[in-house]
Length: 251
Length: 251
DNA sequence: GTAATGTGTGCGATATATGAACAAATGTCA
DNA sequence: TGACATTTGTTCATATATCGCACACATTAC
Image (cartoon, rainbow over all chains, first blue to last red; front, side):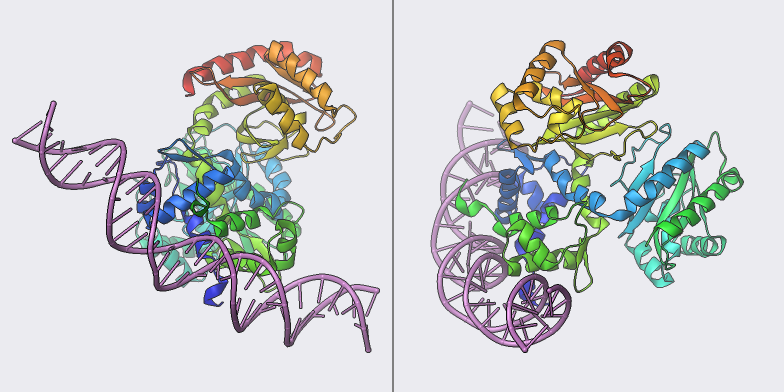
């Protein structure tokens, strides 16, 4: 790609949008300038552009994103066949097992939920399509990492912020890599309260009809009612069924 | 705002992202040029920029959005207090009534779901935060329109594509305006299979602590099990409770 | 074979990015 | 409170990058 095949202003604008997150919903021009590294003048122009187009509100001091911004992400969810294709199977799985079931894909050091059938909320976090979790401590993350060449998996882990969410969390890259080998052999990943106390989950990879792993499928359950050890015998069969059903559907 | 406080390249790029939708998940350069009205050279530069940044895949012929694009919309869902604040009440409401409950806000001629507690899927459409429905034939849309000055509501209707999704759908602006007056007096809106056969719903407005209407709350139910006429006595009390509970929470 | 459609490139006109300069607002401390 | 230092938003000049057109070439359709 040539130098001139790149629209700098567009790239800068996108980084401005990403400057907003849960901890910083309202940002001043200087805030955005600092978190994006853009010049204040440039950040200002991008923010005013967002406001002008209705993607942001501006009260003269702070900018905040508006729901119009959801059009951008929604374009993907609506346009990608995967979420629609997996949803019926996901609903069935959730109903049969009485637990929440989800499908996610990899994006950098995160997994991104693209479909979900929720039962009663068991986690403090509210997961919906578009939600992200760190790849290293989520069952679907383990499965997706295990599907990559080991060097790629290591590279992702090295870019991850490996923090101990609970006393169960694996944070040593070596331990995680070893766990990935186990996952690869078993064909599933088990997480016992590594993300949040009281929550465990089991995940399997989803292959398309050409055998490429394109996503992961999981079931999450409260540790109180279903100890991690019981997940395998209780839910793996249903997961396997859904897995092979989806293999026919995905391409 | 001065002319030079606007980044054209950014605005153009955003319109390129919005060119992708359910019916057109994979677009060529010429496709994008046509649907956005941008010059082919410009569309190409924007698309290559998206690809370069990882927001899109390019196979040499077609572009498709990647999950990374979800970061953009997710910034709003994560950064806005509304979804998080309403979720617990929504879960309760859904559990108590055994039906799906949702909260949405207005964006142009659409309502945008920002939170949802789903029971068994009753609609053909899969609704998640970020999903959109036309404002004119949705119960939450009616409630949100009724909250606006009548001229504003008329303006939105005039920009809407008023099509009859079912034989029940109101499509005449006059009829809808008349219905809005009823909604304003009643304080709730009822939809009987105007969006999809077999689905009815009831919605109330959500005020913040200063009395401004900032969102709408609804319950949807299959018409087979709950005729529209029964929605009011069966669900309005619970909706009213949730409504006033949320009034304390929203600001 | 020819038309129609799609993609890549060069170039001049035009729009944007940049950092410095300035003004206004805000914070600090005696 | 008042004086001073810092931070923030805005403007400006100009070097630089982008836009959109025109054209060449590739591919597909008929």
